[in-house]
Amino acid sequence: MIDKNKILCFDSHLDISMNAMEWNRDQRWTVEQIRESEKGQSDKPDRGRNTVSFPALREGKVGLVVATQISRVVKPGGPIPGWYSQEQAWAFTQGQLEWYRSMEEAGEMKQIVDRSSLEESLALWENPNERTPVCYMLSLEGADSIISMHHLERAYKSGLRAIGPAHYGPGVYANGTDSSGRLNASGVELLNVMEQLDMILDMTHLNDDAFWHALDIFKGSIWASHNNCRAFVDHNRQFSDEMIHELINREAVIGLALDAWMMVPDWIRGESDPKTRNVTLEIMADNIDHICQLAGNSLHAGIGSDLDGGYGTEQCPFDLDTIADLQKLPDILRNRGFTDTDIENVMYLNFVRYLKGYFDK
Ligand SMILES: [Zn+2]
Image 1 (tube, rainbow, N blue to C red):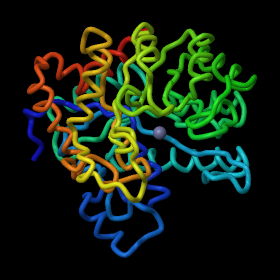
Image 2: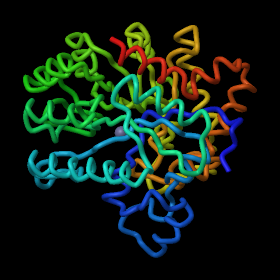
Image 3: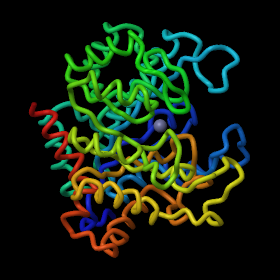
Image 4: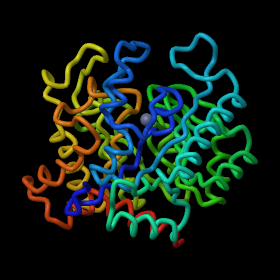
């Protein structure tokens, strides 16, 4: 049964199709069934440690999500896995799109593309049950797969509404986390066409130079789908207070993430342990609170969990077993003096309000 008293949750970053198509995780199964199916597998570090599936999303009343297509282009011999051509990367994102379509046909998901589909989704989640579709808006993490601006228009027609131009390292349009450099000429063109199409620019993963360059030239809607604060973990993947201030000035909402290395300093992948490092949901609340303090209100922080984004319970808060545990957050925030209105803002309302404004423009 879905507890109707739970507060609706909006998650601004989940790689759902990546898990279906690369990890071979049927999202209709329970988290437990997926874990069972991965017993003995060791091809990826998070095997058997997944936290997301449709039943868990429904249990946690995570009714509205931003769901990604994700596919990188890399050079042979590079440190990060990816495709060797944009055509391969594009085709891979189209496979991911077809998976979302098949989940819509199966009644498991419903796409949000405009104001009316957003309102329909909110209405469905006012009275949810075990069959209520997970409502998703499509986003692209890293724009490498966009072969040409013609492909960008095709993607928009498929319902793509947000793009983060970069991911990790060098990219076709912009360099991402752990790199430097402003947007290249193609990146500038990408942002121009995104602005014409009225797509949301996702600031997450842009390196510092590209972050400021993009803010300079892009006049459309911006947000950050999954980011934490440099004040707690001093790494280029995180936002400095100066960056957060600028995002607030631009009316952005920032989704806070649950990847342990972005929550505590000096995390070592495959070695550090969430329990011994005391990684809990309280740290997400620290990041939420930091943004609220900088803003002077609760209107710019949200949840962009990134759960099952290439890691599982080995690298996320130990008081979270599945994504349904996001429902622990309201009490954590209440104990810190957040009002009911503040809590609703953070749990879903900031992103919902943002999207209403975006669709009504
Ligand atoms: Zn990411």
